[in-house]
Image 1 (cartoon, one colour):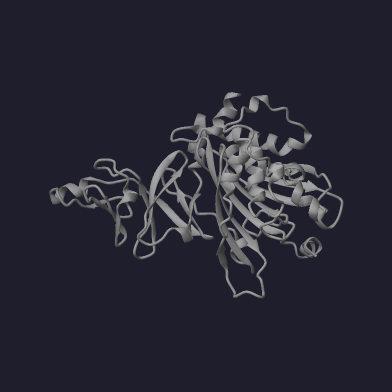
Image 2 (tube, rainbow, N blue to C red; image 1 turned 45 degrees about the vertical axis):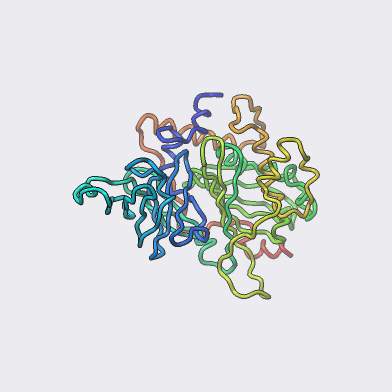
Length: 384
């Protein structure tokens, strides 16, 4: 693998990609699943953290090992808005400052501080800033934040390096093969001409089609470094086209989590709701993925109405490349222009970072960004 492309995949502390990703806010947990007084241990970018919701409802994140004897702090208790270590009772506030040490002199606590990170709740997710210094403002998405509809929040594991999942976001052509069981059923059958260009936020991707209905031209916005904003076609999990926002967050070098927020139609027959968690899928897509990769079943055997079908299809295509693919062996074609541009931008930014040169200040526009399904005329054509 070319050296620069290998750098894309390694995301631990001190690596080029890891340093780059840490300059952006990253989602690390679904907000509804973090209960008051129930700390959790989360892993992101090759590190473990203790995340907890205090009795006030506010969220805090500190280092996972207690500075005393390294026992994981998530095993302890939440006291007010502070966390107390299970091992010897050392207690820390949300800034990481030690506030109590039951068996030590009172003056010692002031000398001990755990590392803490800034966190914010938004769109049903908990975001953390893992970089150094003052964080930039957390990006906002009025397209799913302030429009009518129901936001569906979800997180699912993907058994491969995050960059493989990011590359898939720039590859619209795979929809006609990986997801053909679904796309064939509603007539998305025209191969697109893929066009891409660099923008102030990342990459604008267009799938040019000449037909109408499902075969209209699709637009996707890929935002540096790992955010995908796109309209998703119908699936067994949802019969409408959906506005879909997704972050591809590394867990470690060989695993990642997709955190997503989808905007769906409001069902007039159901009580009004603004946000909903995705109902659990049975069987678990992670297990179905492993069953396919191990050869116990074939993906063609999975029922077309299985709610986790899209997730499993993508997981199999991506993990089928290996946990970390060797990009130097790729033979890219004209339909891979998105992947080519993506690698070019990442290579450029990591080279600047390595040299200590200023990076591009990636910013999304203030106005709402257009997609196929949030354009009123196109929405009517597509959804009928």
